[in-house]
Length: 299
Image (cartoon, rainbow, N blue to C red; front, side):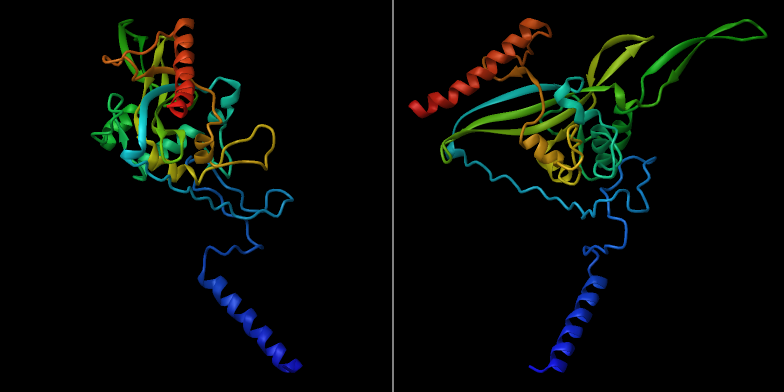
């Protein structure tokens, strides 16, 4: 091949590459600001310029689907409910306000945004079996702020009237998350498999400034939610570069939590007590699960 043919071939390849770039929006133009995760906060404004000195690439994440466990391979199963307290040090990612990799919002804002945009269905606080999706009015009520009563005095008549006011939804009031998960011993792989089935945020309720307790807001079916969480990355308090998606965060069980209920000898569905004794019972329940895997190998 002579030099003219080589030049012609090179120009042809360059022209084809340019056409492919123009037709394929997934190819990134290095001269333009990098794309960020889809915004979940209306007040979030992404940077219109290159924010930093690192030549970043788009973070396009996808979650690999879990293979189903055949019923004939499931030798043993137990259902567990556990609680995540975002005030624990290991759970700082849940309270991070957000950046370009998390859609500009915290974890609860990602969940609420997904429901409002119809990406996933929400279920009622008592519906952790996911039987009836909430309509948008019911969902809006579940995320509405708390009601307070204030005594208002008319400056002219001096008449006193109690007026109800509703506060705006405060993301900092979401202090806990509840998980529903299955522990299954899979004969095919010879190990205990843990799968999250549902997740529910919990909000602190106050009355006249007095804490009344934490209440469930809604349930989400995790296998559907997991596909969406792969698009949003988790804040790393140690290194801004080494981050993972929320799907990897839950799959790898990087959160701190404690057990509040199991299906073992619990026909009435009672929870462990909320004191130190309840925490000890939860730890014993997890120890039983760990020992069960060893027992299955010995049979």
